[in-house]
Each structure stands twice: as structure tokens, then as C-alpha cells.
Image (cartoon, rainbow, N blue to C red; front, side, top):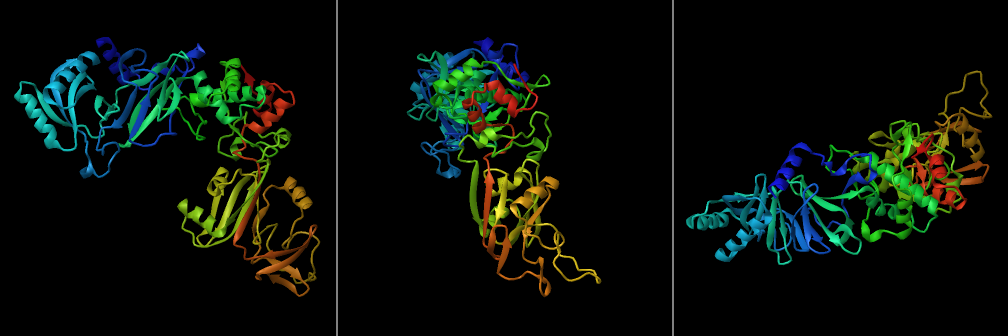
Length: 561
């Protein structure tokens, strides 16, 4: 057991990133990923574990000791009977302990039996406490210093060497179902929790009632956040990802394409300098563990085991999204890096897939948009209009300007859709205060007749066909408020300032409210639009394409190996 303790300390000092995750080892089975479990975590300060038998604690490889199969792990601080308290005066339990310095034990078992002896002698809770040197004994979890000092004095009187200790936010404590502390350790110790599921013949553990394969490590950050990190083999991680990123009932080739995209994304994301590689949400990939695995998606993972997507011999960033709307997008038009394998492609497959997100509409009141702007640290009281300043060659908004009393506020690329909460950045705005226009009114030359020109110059309401022709020539059409613009009438140039106007276009006569309180957004697709369209992959699979053909359609110039 001394050997195991030495291994723990050596790993803590020398292998900050933990060699349990053997990044890109020759044997693909050696790849581990680390996922921060955010859901269904109930509290920042504590987490419940349930095992399929005894819960075993490990170092990087070996089992160290076991505890009972139901534990609550808490940051060492102030609690009511069960919950963290920010007001420590209301606490029943706290971070003060009496710590015995007489002996450092080489094993949990030796420390446990000594703790049981002390518990019987003093009628208080005693338990093993793992520190850098090994296991020592701690007593009590008191809310005040006096209580821990009194226990230390009792112990010293009987010949022990004990002192009061305040471990606030420095330790993690395991409690049993009777709310009794059974083990404590310093927060930087690299310990892992799991149990063995005999039916699956695999290590598993329940975290807040959800089952995960692999092991769980805890980290304290920001003093009061207890991070739950799942260390799991790559293929077993994918079992919990693929059915939560794509319906398990879809065609097998689509499921395989998703498995490769998810595998490639996961391995690309491994970063030894961070305490975890990915989250379990859409911030990374949706991962819901063992309880949500499906037979079909497990099969897709197994039948593509180890296969990933490469460009020029290197792993790609395998981004994917739900629905393209008709074309995918270049990476630099959504984010900022131009990646050669993330080029926009025509995507009739997504359009033909029956996705409910191919075409969408949503409406915001002006006050809603003002609120969203202010939540993003803008100081806005009035919104006069919204201009779509620039559109990409693949139809997505590259720059959107909000005309406000605080001036023009520009949002570029993904930021506009994220601000507004829209399904995609492929959108237009329809409201009585916004139109496409080419230029502002300019005074006529003295020798020019006062008549309506055939094209250009003055406010020009563009028909659908004209928009298409113009966009092919120049994707930087403006879209903004019609109020304050000029039109040519029989009485000469007039500035628009009325609340309602009538326009004649190819669609007939339209009555426009120039003082609209609503902004109607019409768009296509769902997601950032970069990389593989999942609904497009579904359609390609139904049309007989293989998973590698699907991937090569959406990721330009890649190889599968």
C-alpha cells in the first residue's frame, strides 16, 4: 500500500494531466477522455454516488480501498443536516476537525480500525484522512473552533498528539447514508471513484442517480464548485454520445457517420493542460451516460471502432449541426479561423430530409431585443431598426447592425444569432421598419429633369428576382430602416416620416407600418451550419450513400482511417 501512496503523490506532482488518458496512443483502446458532468448535477457543493456494490477508490491504475455503495461527497465547509449554507452561523456541521498527528498509516484499513477504536472510546465521529504523507485520523466536523479544540484537548489529555484544524474549502469529505463522515482527503489528491457492474462486466457508478461508465474524479474550483469529471474509455464515451446527438432509429450509415464525427471531435478536444476535455452539453457533445445507450448506436460505434477523420494526415475539428437549410458554411464566416476542410457545400440532402428546422419563423417585440442587447452589456433605451450589413456567399448573416439611441451596435458572424437566440444565422428580417435598399437619396443635378430614374440612386424596393440577381453580384446589400429615406414623387423628392405607407411591388400593393414594434425573423436551418448536417446525413443514408461518402460530402478533402 505504501507503493500505491507513492504512486498517488508522484502522479499529483509530475503528471498534472494524468497518464490515464494516453492521448493518441498506438492502441486506440488506451485513449481516455475526461468529461465534466453538468447534468443532472443538483448542487455545486456536493454530489451523490451509488455503486453496483462497494464503491472502490483508485489511483491511476490500482484499487486502493472500498467504501459502502451509497456516498455523498461534499466540500469541507458549513452545512445544515444535508445542504451547504452560505451563512455559517446557521450551520450544524462545519470544517473544524481534531486531527491526530501521532502516526501516519500506510493503508486505509489500518487508519479505519484506529478510527473505529477512537469512535468507541470518545463517542465522536473519527475517520481516515488522506494527506500528502499518507493516512492520518480526523475527528468531528464541527461548525466552530472551540468544539474541535475541546476534542483535541481530550485526546491530548489521554496521551495522543492532536490539534484543531480548519479545513474550509481544502478537503472533500465522504458521508454515508446516516450522514456520518467516513473518509476525508485533501482536494488535490488524484483519487477516482467507481464500482463494478457484474451484469455489464464493466466499471460503472451512478452520479446523482445517472449511471456512467468508467470512473469519477472530483475537483474543487472557485472555492465552492465541486466538479464531477468522468474518466472513461473513448469508445464507451461514444456509447453515451451518439444516441443523444442523432436519433437511434435513423439509418445505420448516418449513425456511423455520427460516430466518426463524435470520435474525431472528442480526440481532437483532448487537452492535457486542462482538468477536463469536454462538457456533457452542447458546449461540446451531448453525453448522457449508460442509461441512454441504444443498441443501434452502440453497433455503429463498434463497427467503426478507432476510425477517425483526417485532413492532410491530421485530425480535423469535426463540427456538425442539425440542419443546414440548403448549404453549409465556411468556418471563417461563422467563427474566425479558415479551415480547408470546413468549406460550405450545397446541401440538397438536408432540404429533402423533412427536417422541421429547414424553414422557421420567430417574432420579437422591440422591447425584447432591447433587453437582449442590454443583457449583453449594451446601454440601449430605444431601437430604431436593424440592418443586415453583410451576407456570406452561403446565405448566412456575417454582420448585423442594431440602430439604437446609443449608436450603431455591430454584431458579426455567430454573435448576432446567439444574441437573438435564433436557430441559425441564415435569416432575414421582415417588419414595417426594415427594407433592402441600395443607396440614400442624393440631390439631382441642376440640369437634370425631376423624374423617377429607371434604376438605382433613390430608395428602391427590390423584388425577389432582383434581390437574387443583385446578391449574385454583390452580397453586401444593406437592410435597414425605411424611415428618413427619400422617395421620388410627382411633387419631387420627399423624406419618409409617415406611420403607414403603400408600396407597389411584384407582389402587389403592400401597406407598411413604419413604426412597427415587432421584428419578424425568417430563416433556414438549425445550428452554426459548419461541417456535417445531421439531417442531411440522414437523407444521404436513406438514398444509399455510405458513411464515408457522407463524411466526404460535408468535410472537404478528408480521408477516413
